[in-house]
Length: 490
Ligand SMILES: C[S@@+](CC[C@H](N)C(=O)[O-])C[C@H]1O[C@@H](n2cnc3c(N)ncnc32)[C@H](O)[C@@H]1O
Image (cartoon, rainbow, N blue to C red; front, side, top):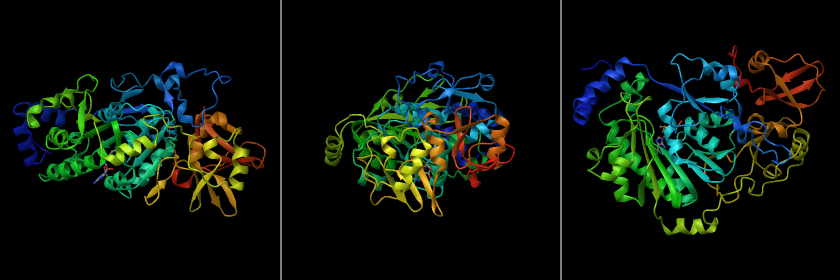
């Protein structure tokens, strides 16, 4: 038996792949896993520079305007990931994850093959998009980048602990998403046919991660693919109901197992109102195998990344169009105005909170329409959810961007607002050099003289880091205690 693999796994792969298993096995055991990152607040593209501020009104969210990556960082990113814009391979021992730039959401570290499902969903600004199995948020954050801060993005995670991590990543990357903690079935009952595009990055037996994750190898059992396939079908049944007629659904896994890949897709094509659509010809990805899924010839439209062939870990992706759905979905589509893009500033009517209005006017040159009223949730004030998204009765962690929090008698701007707001909207900013930014993220007060009493957006270049407050002789540090780290690199 090959070291590190369970016997039943080896038997299963030999049965499936024949002699090719030897190549895969060798690659899994003798080559290093691929690592990558996606630029998020940064871009390598030159065309984001020099927007004409007289013509283009300042967008509400920073995410709408990625900024050019510093040349010195760009030099270390030599090899692009071919299937994703602004994504690069990084060395296995890269310490970019320990830098101030990572903590500020300039990029997201993600295994390259895992970038493909968000590309496959091909979302556009203004769409209504759901990431149904979203934690820790790798794909949600890519979807948000593609949506440019426009439309409705909902990130759902069923697991109560994992949804907290999801919300933290969404905050760090400055994303104005709705975050929910529900079962797919409950969402399907509440939002029939609401979304233009739904991503199902399904829980799976994780065989594609065996090279990089010894825990995945140890946790695998012979039953896992059977249990996972049954769960995947349940999730897909619900997911289909969430998509508008004619909308898109992407199904992905990080397993090699045919039972969870080709066989689930073959089942979905027979049981659900779905047709497969072609994916781009990503370099070194292979077609799905019809012989592993009931000889269904359409399965060549699905894609696999094999760790012994492609430049990434194991992944499977299938893209569907939803042909028709139930009557509730058709009625819901008519009610929301067909396939029209949704305007991000069309929000439910929240409360007009005088304290928030005063704070917002003090902080911002111009208070965007969607922040003029708020909804409250305990001590927190949020932007109201999109106008046509029903959230009553759901476990909603974040109905939208968190704007402010009540602290004693006072209202303070929330860290999420600092991370999401477009810096050009903010009245008072303090730009830090990298060394000072590292001190700030460690929680130190900064020795600078500014007018006392002001809330200040601290930033590195134009990338926001958090709030500070002017007091005589220094800037008090409002970076959240739970996020502080000593010795971040720069
Ligand atoms: C592959 S992970 C998602 C990774 C994520 N999309 C990303 O890119 O960071 C699958 C997720 O599905 C969740 N999950 C597990 N069982 C589920 C179920 N029955 N319904 C929906 N989601 C489930 C898991 O908690 C896990 O967070």
